[in-house]
Image (cartoon, rainbow, N blue to C red; front, side, top):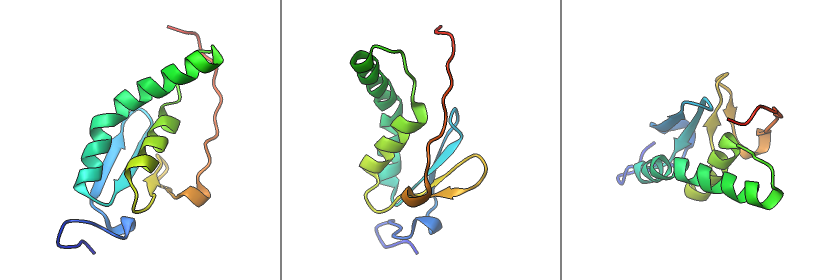
Length: 106
């Protein structure tokens, strides 16, 4: 149920969703403000995050999904709910990042 101020305390009922096309993850937000912040910041956050990792480990990395999840955790302080491309609802307790792919640098 949404409050008078447009905030959902149960993320499963929220209508504030943002699909990140290249990772196929849908991030669910409790308020329009949190959704807007994420939408404005996620591309910048990705670049900064990957630059930090590249300079720290001296290996070119591209962790889009991980960077997005970290930003989501930072912005959404009323819960955690992500839907993956398979339609599975993920919370922090059942989330696992699993992937390792080595590609040629462009």
